[in-house]
Picture (cartoon, one colour):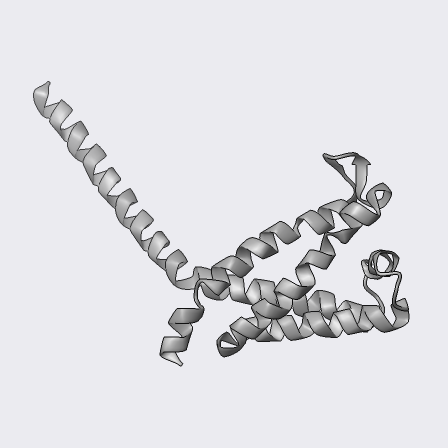
Length: 161
C-alpha cells in the first residue's frame, strides 16, 4: 500500500514539475513578447483610428465634432486623425517612443471631455451605465495603462540605440 501511495506522489510530482516547466516557458515567452505586442497593438489602434478620421469615415467623428465645437469639424477631425497616426507611428518605432507618449499625453485628456460635456451621449444611467460611446471612451484607460508600460521601457531602449 505504501508503494502505491509513493508512486502516486511521484506521479503527482512529475506532473507538477512538467506544469512548472511549461509555466516557466510560457512566462518567459510572455516576458519577451509582451512589450513588442503592446507596442504593435497600441500603435495599430492609433494609426487605424486616426486614419478613419482623416478619411472622414470614423464613427467617432461626430462625437469629436460635438465635443470640440470651437473649431470647424471639417478641419479639427482630420487634424486629430493625423495627430493620432503620428502617435501610432512614434509608438511603433522605439526611438520615437518619448515623442509618441508626449503627443498621447496631450491628446488623451481630450478623449474624456464628452463624459463632462456630453453626458447624455455617454451615459445611459449616470455615473455607471455607459452607452457604446461611453465604452469607447472608457477603453482609453487601457491605452493609458499601455502607455505607462511603454514609457517604462524608454530608458532601456535609449541604452540599446
